[in-house]
Length: 226
Image 1: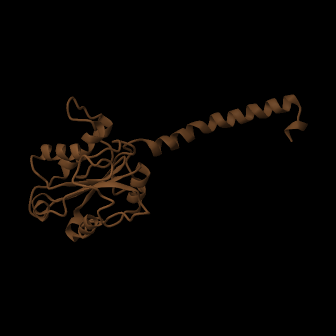
Image 2 (image 1 turned 30 degrees about the horizontal axis):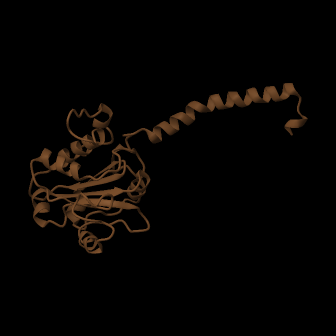
Image 3 (image 1 turned 60 degrees about the vertical axis):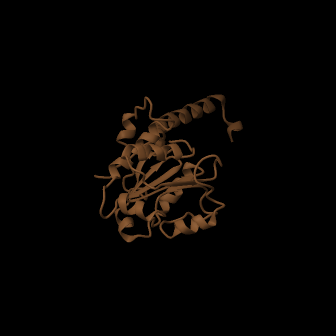
């Protein structure tokens, strides 16, 4: 068709196409930016129940030092166990290869089904009854990619098998991780501390020294207490 057009007609058509592209660019940019804006409030969508801190950060890495930071910040041993398959030099053992551990964990929380979700590891304290009674239920799932984490959160499965914990749980999404916390029925509510910690490891994943969490991460998502 174009071969039968004059040079002038083709030039006019090219200009019209360019005008359309320029006119559409702001709308396309706005849509993409809204979706990818890291820390955007979930609004009225399947992630409305989630405090979205960042869609890509922190990077996927063994969360043992992060757990230590949380316990340091709260001043308590929260009984959190890290099981992961990234490195055999840290944590309390493997995750995927230990069916017995997954079975024990499944009595207290939802375990992503192998084949549906790619999970590298978890950090949890629900297998420690005294820790849960004293400080509440803490659960973090480390996925292979942020897309895996998003798909899991979009499905919004029930997490804690304990009805009271499930009803009171708070959920955060930060990159490769889904974080959950439910306060104890009789004990300190650490929701704000966990919220601060999630934002801290997202903004400063490599350590607390000199850490200054960016303002947009401090306010990202919907505050748990709101």
